[in-house]
Length: 130
Image (cartoon, rainbow, N blue to C red; front, side):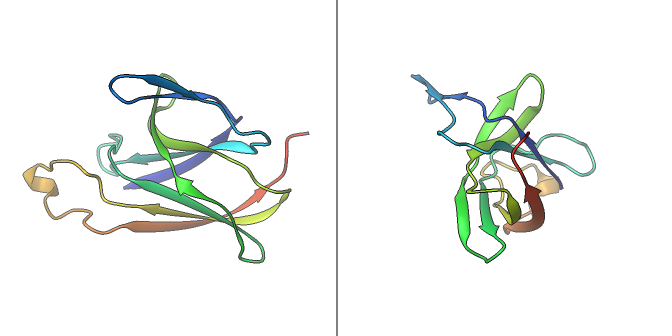
């Protein structure tokens, strides 16, 4: 699996539950929109239906943001997982992603692939845009 993280300006997005479209606006003071792209290492195909959780800790180890990222589709980015994130101030942080196995039917060649969660840890330095 290939895992890429990106950030963008906080942005509204829409969730459709099969009956109703709901607009989710960024919370006041959102720092950025976190995007996590998952793709098959060999084929480049997007991996969907995987629960993705992001935890951000400050330099002292205190959790300042935690939550499940929403599966999202975009004409510009394709399929990814994302959520607006609010950080207290410019600082160095640790981003930990927990990516659980996809909840989907699997073809024979994938029957024994990715049966346990993956954890990825990245160090980030965030400062507001000038």
